[in-house]
Length: 420
Image 1: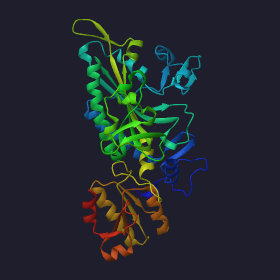
Image 2: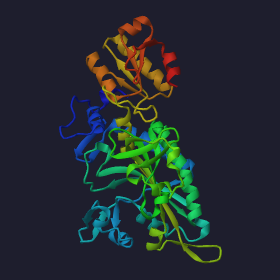
Image 3: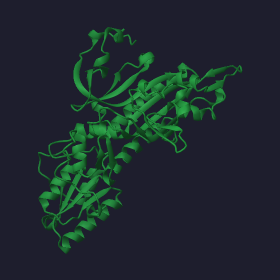
Image 4: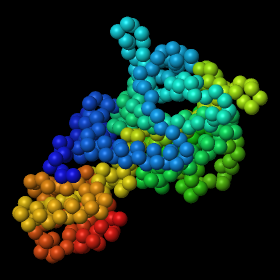
């Protein structure tokens, strides 16, 4: 893609009311547009990152036997009244609600346990129908009191929510254990696996089976108590002798440290709470009815994107892991002669033919501005073509992570091999 064709542009400063590093950098680099506190539009570059993250999650869930669907955001009051979650006071007042012209109240969903359990009543009747694992990527609306963390905590955001429907606790726990590994695969592929810990956290009546996935980061709102070698972590708010006794752990066996962290995912056991309230049952081999046993598994996609920015950004801008970068290569053209234009187009074509995604900076801008923008945008590999490189019959190549070293002079074939 030619950078001159992008309608989004880089800018020197972020809005004055934006205090979070992730949103400041993403706004300046042209990835997102701030509509209001906690509400952001994703521009072409930002959408490419969101889709890369979504593809990773979808791939891992599909391999685990999950099925994707898409539910509505508008929710009927009656369904949520059955679980007593229509009342704002139960969930911290985070419901956004509206009315139809006829006066009926509707809610803008902040989660979908009730909605999917209600759908499954039409599709689950017998033990032969179970287990089932369904997920979606859906816009959620939450009237957050704290919306000062950029895309880490939004009032409107894209969420992957997965729900399991099992015959009993044992069948659910088999899937629950499987999802621990699936989640770590997701975060590893997204580039933050080394910084991320499966974290023991309270989950109300299901605390023994409540885990968060916390990523160590100074921008985090939580405090993580963790052992980096044994990869065990506990949310500081839940660090107690009682936890060491819901999990059979010896505190003396660990070398715990503390650090700020960002929650990037969670997995919960729901049990029969929602299925009982919504009359979601199945008939066993003997013809007896039982409530379906459920679990819930969430990942906020923009939150994961923001965490990646917070963790890897340097003083010059964003640094994307290759797996989620909007493009693999930033081709920076210096000079506007016919010779440079022709060479840049030749290189662009060869890279694309090698299935390498390229952003070609063909703009009529000063070299210093182009290099500064390249660092700000954060694409992993940069290739520079200029009169100098043409004379040398080489290209200037540099990784975004290599800010201290000089660029290398390499042939296109060597660069392609290095990238692939």
